[in-house]
Image (tube, rainbow, N blue to C red; front, top):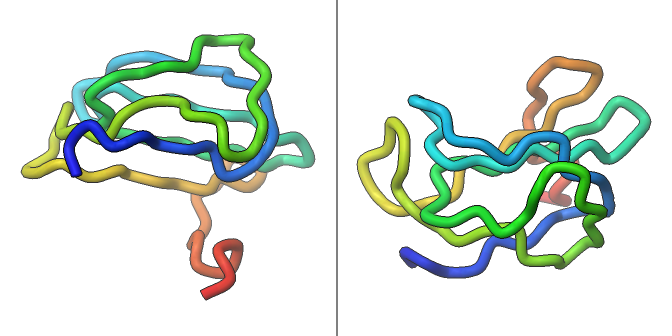
Length: 92
């Protein structure tokens, strides 16, 4: 739902917390070992660059910013600079 809290999926450090024409408000977290996550289309960002993050920390709120047609969270897992299917990491 719009405004629902968005939680980090793993420990890391925020490397970007910005607004983009496509992703809208987004946060990118570096988790080490070549892994990053990106959360986009947020209505509000609550994590800043350089901030250490623990799994479960609230990093923003669900929204519909950027190129979006409704409230949702865009979630990416990036391994060594390439987007990968998150399904294998989410245990589904």
